[in-house]
Amino acid sequence: MSDSLHAQAAGKAAAFADELVAFRRDLHMHPELGREEFRTTGLIRERLVRAGLRPRLLPGTGLVCDIRPDRASPGDRTDEGLIAFRGDIDALPVDDVKEVPYRSTVPGRAHACGHDVHTSIVLGTALVLAEFAREGLLPRPVRLIFQPAEEKLPGGALDVIKAGGLAGVSEIHAIHCDPKVEVGRVGLRSGAITSACDRVVITLTGAGGHTARPHRTTDLVTALAKLAAELPSAFSRRIDPRSGASLVWGRIESGSAPNVIPQYGELEGTLRCLDLEAWRQAPDLMHELVDVIASTYGAKWELEHHRGVPPVVNDPDAVAAMRTIATGVLGASAVEGTEQSLGGEDFSWFLERVPGELTRLGVRPVGDPVYDLHQGQFDVDERAIGIGVELFAGLALRPFR
Image (cartoon, rainbow, N blue to C red):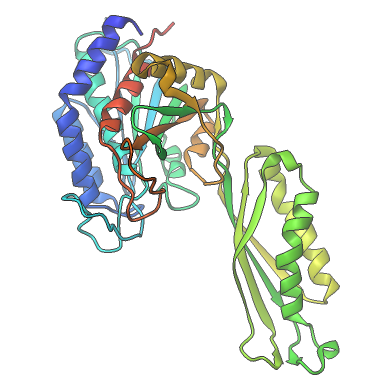
């Protein structure tokens, strides 16, 4: 992107800064859960229409909006070089405990993951690029994706894909708030940046009985305990340790009395994995290992492996493009590497089909303590919104062809 376009993009982003902060605060006060984001969808649509754009509503909630360069022929609708930007629009089922004027007005609901910021950034990108298009300065077509239900596995990205929202896209980018990083900085990483995340439920059944005679029963509690202790260890020895696979239990349940061996028990947890191929192999391997351990105790078993999301695997070329833009916007010293996370993110479904990348955006006010994502205290330095708009606008405005 030329210095002239860079300066123009910064100026246009600054002109919308107050409006975008107000928009973000409105979303923050009125959070909506996944596939219930009707008010949010309506607000986004109304603002895009006022900007002269033609958004397309997705089935249910969410929308997409294309911006195309001025062409010599009005009928030229080519998608060559189509670049997309994703903003997730849903909130979380947690209480907002901050003492701020824009605190959530909905009990048990909060934008505690920064999706209100992501949405405002993509909206601001649309407003800025719409002006560039009217001025004949937009070099390539752009798609803005306002995606529902990121927090609901397997994720609203699949809704967007099913509705054709990724059709024609050749490159896609997303930003995610990072409360560990101060505002004015970004974190980049090639390859896997977030983890696959699946839900695993194991059910054991067998003949119960008296704890005085375990040899005449299926000692279900012991079998369940062995699965809880041994399955993660055995799994880790049968899969490449470089895959970052982690099987952790969150619930174990069986029995109701100290002297009764129960007939039923459940074990539930999550499988996380940073390697795409290992993630694909995991279900068959887990079935094999559960069978070996449960059969030792004569227990009948059932394994439910609920696929969540694959890992987000950033394309090196897309990361390099973001690095160039971020260096121009923020300076080389503000662009840093970032760690891998075992959290799940459904942007991965897009990256299975189209090259792209997810950037971590610094949002922590300088000197403030770190409040992690998904906590009711989470908040951001709203200067990050304008930075995100400049980054996305810069990617769209860089030379094409």
